[in-house]
Length: 84
Image 1 (cartoon, rainbow, N blue to C red):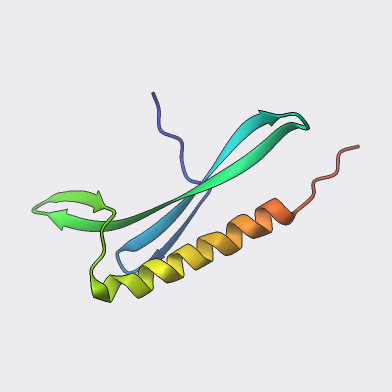
Image 2 (image 1 turned 90 degrees about the vertical axis):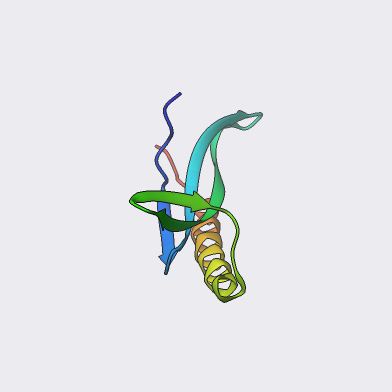
């Protein structure tokens, strides 16, 4: 199964929050819901790896990237798209 690309990525240092948009069917019709993935990038030799654990110095970066992602998701879900 192919991985979907993020709608938006927020990055501070090596910490990033990726926002993914997914279309779902509901009783009111189709709508888009969003999820956020938080990760830290690091190198192991020449290989790039990602983990979801953070040390004390990285926690403020994780919090801020999540705040940026939250602002984006709230703005996207607050918009009303009118159709003709």
